[in-house]
Image (tube, rainbow, N blue to C red; front, side):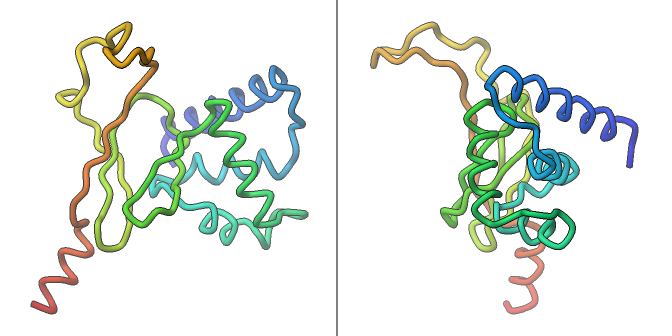
Length: 154
């Protein structure tokens, strides 16, 4: 693991503690383990993937706990909830403004870091009357693995 990754995980743990304290939420071992597992991954896992990865090592973890905890984390701004083509929510511990790309075949999601897609400045108000807080763009395409699979069958 790189030093940058260790620093990112440490920042997320500190952010968890700060936000839980501010929101009056308990800092349970399940919450800590779930955030740690998500922060270590780059594949934008689903709730089920995180549950499968943790169920044998985290005592008292249920699928319902994972779903509720991820929703809570997203609601308090600790993580991002990323939509995918397959209608399964995926989660990202990196809450900095960045975009994603989603595979139309397998549903894989990856970060797409390119400042060329960023707006120069967020407008204060939109003609619809909405106050804009943030934005994200999700591109769709075919991931390298699915491209390779398609070339073998073509």
